[in-house]
Length: 331
Image (tube, rainbow, N blue to C red; front, side, top):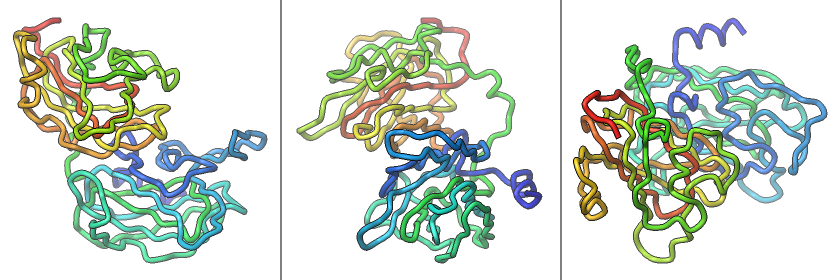
């Protein structure tokens, strides 16, 4: 554990959700969702805990593979240089992944079939209920990782130790407010569709109760994408965007983006919103998890309104826009 402690003190875990880590896609997570693998907490074991899929495990666990190939998980990390990787199989004994490999890439939105992957960890044997650290000697920056399991099984934690490309240690975060929250007067103004869930749910501050407690559009059968326009409760500068797809597993949006503007009137807002400044470029989302974006946020100054676009459709439970309030405006 001394080695782990040393890494944690010297470097940032780039895979932590609080730093922007998120699952983009996964081949199989029947027994335990891949998002658990990114938790900051040490793995636990609860002897008598079962769920609808079997024994509850604190990590990612795929089903037993009965066909050719292997399981994999693609995740976004806080962009940066990776110095060490730790694979933790704590409490996975008869169900751990026998071997893994790890690949990395740098892409603007999300990896696809044309992405060129670089191997950071060659296929390597794992041991159950243990921790294994791999040193990475590559000074390039990476945005996404692909963890391959051979052929299947479980991993409790994936820790990616490195140096963020952008990591602001200023104390301004202590002054940040959720500019869009209903608590400060945030309001959902317009959207193109809210067939399954009302747009105002996006701005609620209470915990997400279920799939019906978010904004969800119908399945899109024509070109284009869905969108919602929000009026901030307070004018301010956005520094952090949080998009929560809690409970949306088979119906989360593939991607999202954010535009923003400083307005004095809501007249013709739908028509004009397509030309607002880009505050968050198109970026991949994953199922049933909180996505945090900081390094990807573009400084567009002080704003009063935002337009969230989702591609092509789907559901988002909550949206938070954290930043500094400008005192010359109130809702």
